Image 1 (cartoon, rainbow, N blue to C red):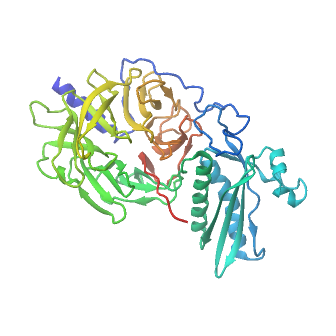
Image 2 (image 1 turned 45 degrees about the vertical axis):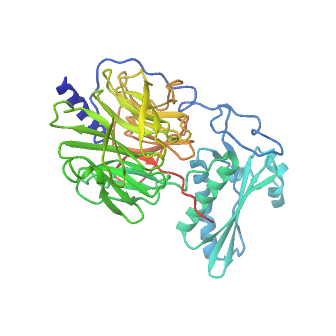
Image 3 (image 1 turned 135 degrees about the vertical axis):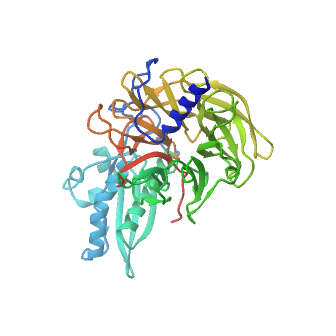
Length: 498
């Protein structure tokens, strides 16, 4: 049995290193896609929720949700002959529709649907926009302030006839303009949903610049822009994750020959081994570290070698990130991996092979008075369908769990979603390569994941980052410019002052 544990534990560890896993044997058939799966068309709502004089809040998770139609007239110019303003106007005309649609919340309408339909002043009349079924109008005007440009952006809620957000941004370059548009769209989203948008956040992931490159840790914007390499060595780096502030990442590195957990402050780029794992660690392999919601603990998977009782077993441990003694947390069940705290700190989701093939479990947690230590009160099995379920991730409200599950019938990993108690299991991906490592956006409305999809369903290519709405719709690639990108984790919202 010990030999079997060693084999299974090693395979689970290697899931993070390879995109192809041999097809296992016995399986319970996994569910087919739900009605909200890719390719389905959500029913259109006849009017916005809370229509009237009260706050307008649109629930993107409502089955009746439809994307809001946005019209974007050409941004006005204070000086129509200024070459710099003309260049910025052209860029904004291309970037604004792309970014609005990237959110999964808006659908832009072609300009020929509203230009040439009457006098120019018609574009200022709410009745005109209602007539052509526009929900939102985004207007812009470029000014010249000294040597630099200033962009004024205004969003108008056509149904309620009021201004949503009005912001001004100094623009000195194309990069600043692109950033300003993203920041404004985040505010626009918050006006409608009550939740901040996605653009003022980062995604951390493992990637390779070329086929022969070492796998390193990178961060990027949700749209794939501003890719930044965090690690630089010939060792393998995998399984990155954020701290709650978005200023530090932990990851697994083979720098010493065996996997161990490191931490980097992304502001200073200072990298160090987690102090509690620096000594007395010769007979262990450590991987998959993740912070607790208060950042006082890191939970991770440890495989112990050379111990008669625990040799070959993968178990879940805790260690303080700033120094302290590591300790066993969930042990004795054979294979326990992929631990992750719920954002509210009440639960720990993890994969366990205690009954054979790996399935997802949820442990109930009890914290001490100063929230520096935690114990397991009890646990429950969450998944029964599928042969191999792993890589769980929590929604920001701790009510949903997304994970990767292996479907033997099609020999593929896919992304699934369920309630925190295991109910209402839904399939989000299907017949599109292997899909793994889901992670929720900070507003809970989207998921990032990696996929090997290419060409047809039977093809497997290099892993790349993908994004989709939390119901599985609007799946699209995130172009990082790297040879391969995988194991993404979405960081917290990082608001920037205007």
